[in-house]
Image (cartoon, rainbow, N blue to C red; front, top):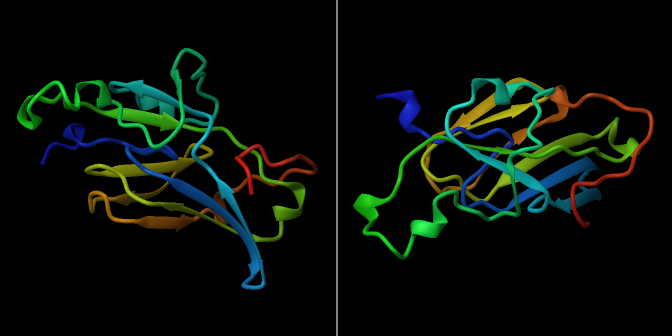
Length: 153
């Protein structure tokens, strides 16, 4: 199967609603709505995996957002465009999240998605629109201060 026929995900998603969770233990859990402040680029772009990549010219979107949604009700499903789409989001966790487990959950990704954080591949999901998640803790870069800009609690 040709990998290029899949949709890649870069903390990335098609028709998904995401939740980022920072948790110390079950009694101390914070949830953030992660749907706002995404960037979208349709087409191949291997450099987009890197943390330092400049996505300033990408389309600003909020999720859920299907990159080919403008065609959805205009064309028969067999005539819809196929391509690779990159979704990116830059975010900071609150400083008190440094010693907590951090998870990201997706309600679904169309076809297949690959997830990268800080330039590192963390996982692949190939089960269509089924929910899935990843533990981001080993990939989070520590910081000394900051306020979470990842959405509302």
